[in-house]
Amino acid sequence: MTALELRGVGRQFGALRAVDDVDLTVAAGTRHGLIGPNGAGKSTLFKLIAGTLRVSAGSVLLAGRDVTGLRESQRARLGISQTLQHSSLFLPLSVQQNVLLAAQRRHGNPGSLWPRRQAAARDRMGELLAAVGLSTRRSAPAGDLSHGERRQLEIAVALACEPSLLLLDEPAAGMSPAEGDRLVELVQALPREVTVLIVEHDLDVVFRVAESVTVLHLGQVLLTGSPSQVRESASVREAYLGTADRAELFVQGGPG
Amino acid sequence: MSTPADAETVTTRTRPVGAAIGLLVVVGLALVPLFVAPYETTIIGRILIFALLAVSLDLLVGITGLPSLGHAAYFGIGAYTAGWLTINVTAEAPIPLLAAAGAGALAAAATGWLAVRSGGIFFLMLTLAIGELIFQLAQSWESVTGGSNGLYGIPAVQLAGSPLVLAGLRYWYVLAVFLIGYAVLRLVSASPFGAVLRGIRDNEPRMRSLGYSPFRYKLVAFVLAGAVAGLAGGLLTAQQRLVTTADLGFTTAALALLAVVIGGAGTLWGPCLGAALVVLIRDALGPRLDGHGPLVLGLVFILTVYLLPRGFAGLAGLRFRRRPAEPA
Image (cartoon, rainbow over all chains, first blue to last red; front, side, top):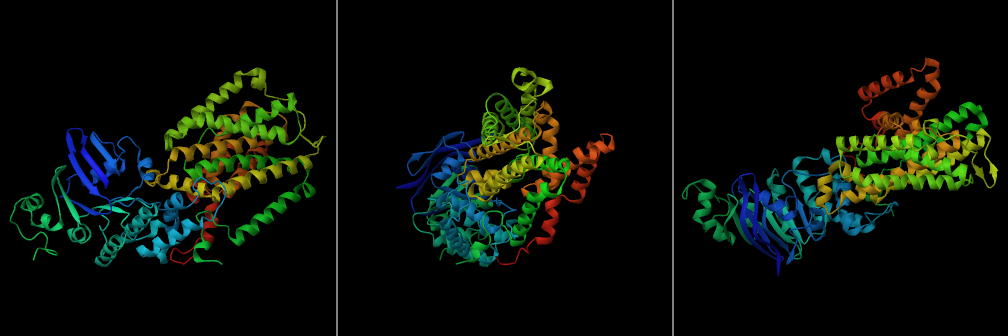
């Protein structure tokens, strides 16, 4: 059972092929890492999966269903949820209102014109805020949060959609090491019904979370394999560093 | 039973202080005809009508983030509908009003599906164009609207068969309908739907990625605002028993937007204060200043924008704003 399948997906901006003929299969319930140097097309690929951008070529299948022609909101209702590289929150609204907006679509009555308590959505909101460590900040406007806290709130908002496929775009960027650890634990603790696709610059985080990793380079798939295969690959080092034998790229989790 | 989560809902919070002030204001407004002369009572009635228009506009401007310059169109359509019905069909109380609200909603639905596809300055220009279009229609459709003469000779509204001729009775009628209209918008603003509207206002792309279709919500908000504006128009007909094209023209639309901004967009009660100021300056102060009311309004607007960027409501915000770190 595949959660996500990309078939020959491409996206051009003028003459630039930001994403070029990418095939990718992510099995349901796995944690899949997507890495690559700056400009490799990782964020663009995420937007193509989420439907923020339309593909120029190829097709996107979600759990076997072709969603290429669907809008972003329709794909979200089918179970895609994402955190964005640059936090995208409702800054004037409080932390809990941010999560509740996402939670009430699945657990509440978003179309109700009459005030409601939406107990189920509230309970879920409380759980998620506790899980990301923002329980004490629930009344603060999102705009008052620190950068790291905003990243945590992003994750709570994305999870409140109860996704079957969670796209995390550099979730650890700007987080302290302790916050990064907490993020890793959070992702590891997610139920297996949630498939996770994670783009991250901190390769240590990726290798701790992901069971399989795809390396993207210049918009194309360079390699897909287990974390250890990727670590040992000479072509990956070359893509990152320009040469095959420069210093240790994967200091933290190097082989042996 | 009260958990921390209860203390703050996704909706606008009603604090005890606010509720007490609100109750006092309602009681005070209800007592007006007993203590105030008929002319002044009529002015306050006009304020209430204009305030209802401004509050309905605030649902778009302050809560959904859609600044409209054509909102008077639905107000005027409601007024003409109520006027025409009162003359030709019945003056019996709720019927002209309900028809006015219905006509406002229909007109908003017919034009809104186009307007709400845009946002920001484009929405402003589109609503301006729609407003002008409807204004021209009212000018030229003389058999129904009376053209530039207006629709006059409208009989007094009847309540259970007896016409409301006395200024005081008419005022209470206006007040009751105002309170109903205001309550409806307050409830909508406090509902999960209202929360979605605020989400759209603050970050529409994010709402899409959360699985919402902003278009549907914006359209429903637009139709609701049109219905309440139509209701206010129906009240106008009951109060002044005359409808002219000026009531759905650009000036009325601009003054309504002015009232929202001066009062404090997004608060619903702020625009009521803004409406009071606008009507007082235009109708009460204006004649004494040789018709220079608009000039005073302009000055007030400039001062408000500079001194109170969040309108009158911002003043209350300074006093009541919570510390961000304070637990709920």
